[in-house]
Image 1 (cartoon, rainbow, N blue to C red):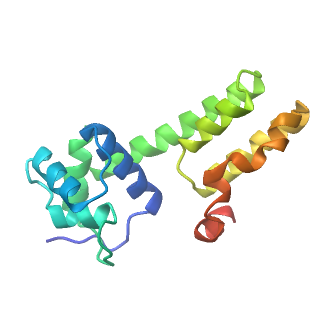
Image 2 (cartoon, rainbow, N blue to C red):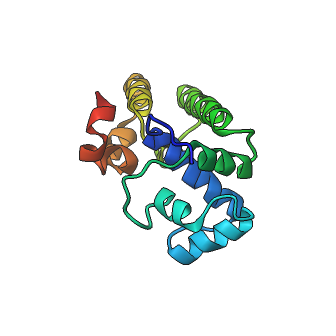
Length: 166
């Protein structure tokens, strides 16, 4: 089976996992969940591949481009490349919309936390968060700064995301 030489970015795989779960209507956490998803996908991707994708089993093998293409098609995209383009567009649009709402004062701290929780942690998200901080400084939003550590995706796995920050 054809293998991609470059490992897919974790942020793309994380987004793929979310989209597969959303499309199937079920959180994929166990081997039986992967078997069920395999059936939904008409066995175009094996249960073992889905187990690796969803980290049900530990494995260092890279998922084949063919499997990624099948997953992307199941999610409604033409192929893996189109899926990544979709991810990039969604990420840009979501963060721009959140920033715009912050500038307009239409997002309170609680809604902002929920909005950022839905974003996948990347270097761009840390840059985006810095922009949010600057807006909140200008707005003199004391509640935001009292609750800044509630943005768990940004502060929980700092070791995991260390290189994304820089």
